[in-house]
Image 1 (cartoon, rainbow, N blue to C red):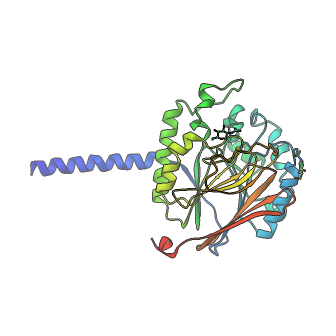
Image 2 (image 1 turned 60 degrees about the vertical axis):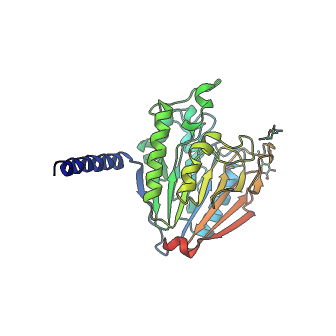
Image 3 (image 1 turned 90 degrees about the horizontal axis):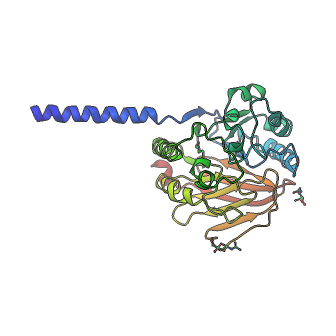
Length: 330
Ligand SMILES: *[C@@H]1O[C@H](CO)[C@@H](O)[C@H](O)[C@H]1NC(C)=O
Ligand SMILES: *[C@@H]1O[C@H](CO)[C@@H](O)[C@H](O)[C@H]1NC(C)=O
């Protein structure tokens, strides 16, 4: 009886710990209402805020046209929202000049979900997260890490800059706004735990993870080794379908070698044409474009279609995948 009580006590304590952990795994969640017909359509753009320059305005107007054709539900930004050094504060006119005044088409007057890029951390990173910006332009929503439940798909936004050791060990001339991130190892380990829990609990047909830095890339920055080592195993173990990123100023699609994950780079919202490609580590490379453009995603319960467009809105690459029936039942 005594040892039974002891066992019970241990069990109660253990489950309390589990409850506490569950509660502290608090990535903020948002419900995105959709058209209710089981489809979801959105655009993805990254590395864009340059007051319309470097073809940003041309990309924006084609996003508007395609957004209207598709009747999109929202837009995803993969970070590096404002160049060169993020925003100076919530009053920085760069916000209106590079966002509000550029993405003017009526089809783009939808919710935008954004993560921070490394350039955003070189300014007042906290300003981009501020509800004050949402008052200036109600489309804006940028947080460090969060989850969007969009019925047929769930999107998991991950703050990837704090994973990159080089920004801490050799920042060069750059000053990063690491408020609320220090110490980075603690920050990233909590983040990975939270993400893993959210992915495990997700009942969505499609799981999409969004970050600024590439896991796999054949362009300028190459693979982000910290993400290959720490983030990728979690995505592979939890049936993630897509990983969306920016950082490299190009468009690309790479298939994972160990899982069905597709690595999709949409980081071509303004300055591009770097001419810096190295396919030595190019396993799984399916498509690469060095110029400006953006990407669209269309999902139903059974299939997903991804399309890449150039600065004229011409289709560069289209890819469709079907979800196996077995997978959707399980
Ligand atoms: C704008 O896009 C056109 C067409 O791709 C390209 O020729 C031109 O170099 C681009 N401009 C800049 C500044 O990248
Ligand atoms: C290309 O990548 C490989 C392996 O990642 C590296 O060894 C090589 O030096 C790179 N080439 C150039 C020209 O940067």
